[in-house]
Image (cartoon, rainbow, N blue to C red):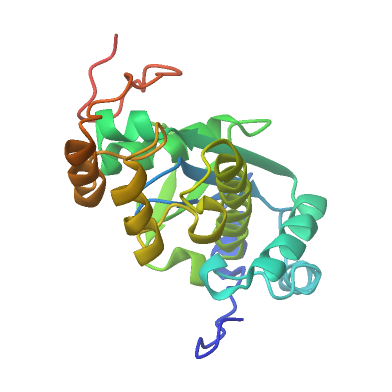
Length: 244
């Protein structure tokens, strides 16, 4: 765990309450990469085994001991916990929004689009969604979004770890295909090293031009705009986007 970070373990209280009320399957949903200057925004949806009683909840908590908000884990811990989550979970879906799509739609819409894609990538449509901060009204599924969901709900915490491990692997691959930016180390976030690389090399095709340092480097290098975003699908039903 990073130095100075207080460990807060999430619970299954919300999942247990919803299961008692007849909801299920319950998917926790979270995203990573919202503030990065480069690379995709990645979301994950995780459906854990149902908990019908406190003893079952305690058993699942033991099986997923140390699963928590991905930001409080070291890279090695996240990798290990992701393997455990995949072995225990009933279903996992991953949604990806590319940098070009984020430039076209903006972060707010892109965030919801990644989450929607993650939910739709599950083996089945869940009966209830638990989300960190963001609601998805375009999905006609009962849902609750709340602050610090990844520190409160075990399902959301599991989703945060899966999303983070997936995105880190993508950034390592982008580091190999776009050398010089050190994506494998800073994962596309704004650091002094990243800013210096932008000034030296200009933006790459996976940078996000809506961020001021990227836009400024592009103008200086006269490389703006790059190729149009590759749109995988029209994000139907999301506010601010017109369906094609």
